[in-house]
Image (cartoon, rainbow, N blue to C red; front, side, top):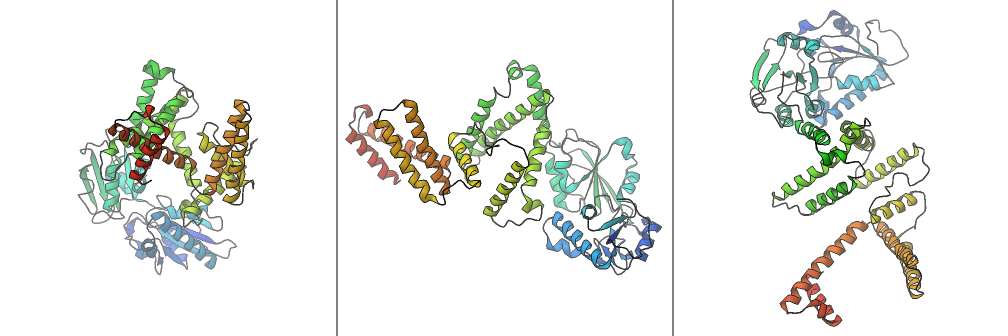
Length: 497
């Protein structure tokens, strides 16, 4: 969007919003062009009346009430942008005044510029950055300073050691979150707090990382400068990536591994994570240690595959992270868009619809594109059935699915009686199992979970049978069928399952 210096707001067909900046705080920092734009506008709005220069925009409507209505700043900014667009269409032209400069950390302006229904005219203004560079006595270009939003510090500063200028540090909880994001901090790293820059009560406080959230009560005019950190933010992930590359270069075993050779370890680590989850206890935090260990093993498998691909010049771990990030955003329009989903079922419905749209956008030779052939058989069967059901090939309810099991059992029985070829018997048995999975899907029961629960129950009961037999000085192999049934029934009554 081109910067405009027009102050003649005559008749026009498109609704227009002139955006001006109120500078870093002092009225002396507002340029003449901004003052002219304010004076020429009939309908004026300010993002917040809390800014020291907001009073210069006479008879302006502020959006301070939006901050009280919403829990997340993203929702506040979206609501402000929507109200501004509505007012612009109503009056044909409005003026919108923001703190600092229109294009420096102003999400509402970014949202307006994305709105094709309005034309946004930007009037350049001085920002808090200009004062910050003067106070810090540095050239930001020469020093390669990176500007970071304090609300997204962990994400935006990942892998960085500085220098960083962190804005939007308006509350102690923001400063605390910044501290927690840097797990490898020693605590004595120097930090400069810039408070009320350009105002009479300006403060420049030199402190440490440890004291960052303790030396001042921050507000919307507070910024921090981090000259250098000993290790990058999110350094643990960076160290893991570096370790993976080192092992690939120096360990004979790691060096010869391929994506294919690592498949067995990926599967094993996944199941070990599941075991750790099943062993978690709310009352015993020591069970977290095993969970952490197993998650780490699984995480390393992901890193290992990404490192191999990186060495091949194909993709990196950053591509993996970016891919899942973008997919999750895309499939959560009820969080990041304007889609309504007020229940878990609604979320799943939206998710499946988006997946189907994504599959339709890709040329495929099969409607089963995306169903992993190497999935465990129960999962594989369930996914095939679900995909077929999406195309109308399904029983209307569980009655048909239940009857199908009986039909398949009869065919299996017939094949056994006729002493058919073993491969034929195996196919008939497979049909029975496939039909059972179909019924479980109709009943809303996960087949894998149901079978595992039954297996666990059998394991527990049979261990009880073994223990009971030992108590009675019985050898299981020597027991009659009647004795085994009696032992089983006794354990069954004890467990009440």
